[in-house]
Image (cartoon, rainbow, N blue to C red; front, side, top):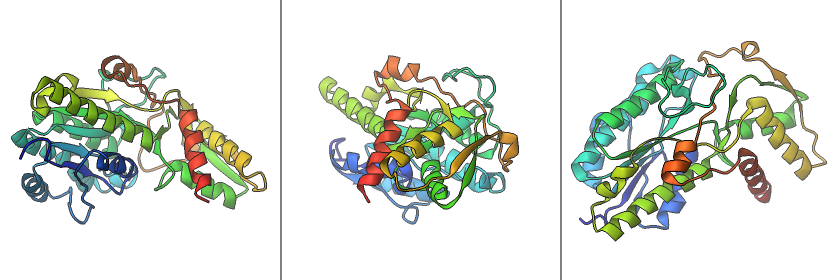
Length: 310
């Protein structure tokens, strides 16, 4: 089967990022996007059988075990999905000449200091989730597959379970909300990540066509880890304040809860969170020529989309 006729395999279609990638990919041709029930990413044998039967031209892995606190007690499953699955996908991708596009996280860093992390900085995850995602990066790289790994942070969208939607719901139900104000990072819209992923797929495929080479050869000079999040930084408190402000402008008759800034120590969780999740996206701009929008711009777009649905 030629590259042109082979489908793209997209995992995590029911997740925030995968759900945004799917309609964009469908405009480009055949996509196979199995649900969790159709492809169990904790089952190594099932992954291998699925990929071998499908022979996709791309593998886009947007699936992950993302229950950060639960992972502390569910280490085996977190590592199966976040660490073993990317490695196995990479090993199978090598056999069929398919590049792999994979998403990772700011949680691979310890979160100390205040300087934005670069791709070459030492990692040091604080919990099981971050450790499993780091192992996934390493396993994919070691597999020998041509790969693009995008580390991102604080993903949200107009649908799905995420911080923005939770806070908006609670702000309508309560008088006061206590929100952590000493963790710093960049809220990142799932659609911006989807646009990045599909942009890279299109770029590599066009390059392969123009050069008359196999897709994996066209991807080769692009391979590596890149930080990809919306531009600018804030705190969880600042993030909440911004979208509640926008919601208040859109619904002046609605009363929203008052936000109260607190320290991380006042909101203990089973898994430690990095205080500094700032990611430098300079490599993404410099080497791939892609710039993510400012986080405030994307929050405004999400709020407009949510209100348009009402």
